[in-house]
Figure 1 (tube, rainbow, N blue to C red):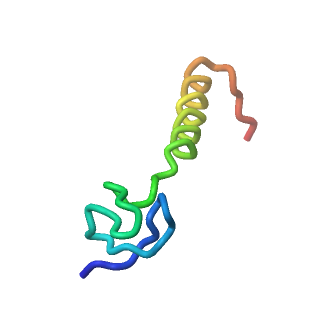
Figure 2: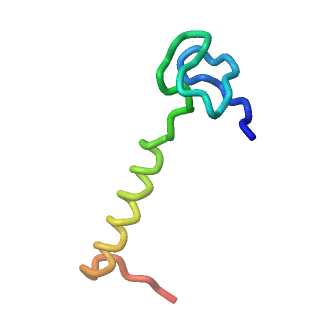
Length: 61
């Protein structure tokens, strides 16, 4: 069963199964995935792992 989501362009409610927003005509009405946030977290994670293998970060227990 489809649920209502907000169109990422006009913000009006649209069925999650819709291919086109009936209000503004946007072809992909599903909301944007926050790729910047996930990309930044992934970069930080990779950076920490690389620094750990390089021996730069020393954990004191």
